[in-house]
Image 1: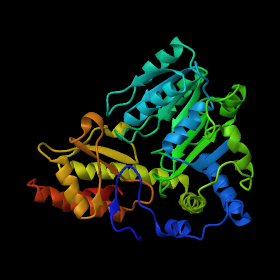
Image 2 (image 1 turned 90 degrees about the vertical axis):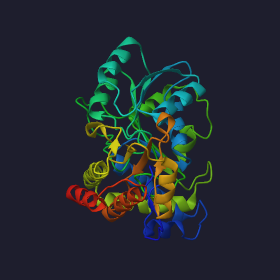
Image 3 (image 1 turned 60 degrees about the horizontal axis):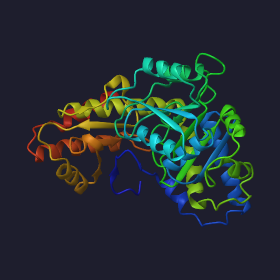
Length: 384
């Protein structure tokens, strides 16, 4: 790869050369038949990845734009929204819902833990909720939601199930055709961004609506949005040669290549690989006296939030790692300074992880901690 650093943060993630090559192609006009063909292909591949017979949308924007698009097209002002939050980014749905005039209730877990499914059942039984949001893997905590448990609860109570896959899509199962115990119990909306497990640069918001979610939009008299109104985008997604807002031509080239790589590897293979990577990284780091805040049974395959051993200077440590080409993220909110976050998703390879684990150990030794980098690397390799 052309990358000069190991970008092991929760996103953006490492970009492979073929995606860089696609990104660097000559910019064609957004109605050029050659570009239209690439866009169509990317849309088809997105439907294949998520196994949906509904509509998919690929537009300029961040994951937050995708969150807005998912909510504003399914929930009307005054209707009730339940947010299941496992951390900082689950909480973001609260602000978005309030901005659009929804009645927002939230079930928040202790950081590092999942929301108790019994609380979800009780909450949904207590009132009529239009939709429920689930952050599949929260980027702040490294906690994964259990869709097998949550989707049946949500759907049996008549609400739409909206899955935030920003740090999960293409690495954790988000099969919109899957029946969770009943033919009608399926994921209704998946939203994500381009820069995490999909493995390309930031800049694209990707949202998929199944038929139930589209029916919910049809029942709305209108939405308090323009750019995020799916009715302005459906004609474009059916025929990318039409115009609503100029698409990010070069990013679509890159996304089409990313989708090719994702589907060539195979979804099941990607799920297995990411699960192995996540566990291996956490086990390797545990040999350094470090501990993930999420217990292994609820830990995300895509990233981990790791507590430092006593006395570590977070800023100085990550700066020393950066000088050696390993880029990690600090923790958020009350964990700032006490933990770091490491991504292990997308185009990340075993070789990258080996190098990072070794350099982390060597740097810890420089900081006065006596650890064994070779033992850590060996424990990583046993699991990957």
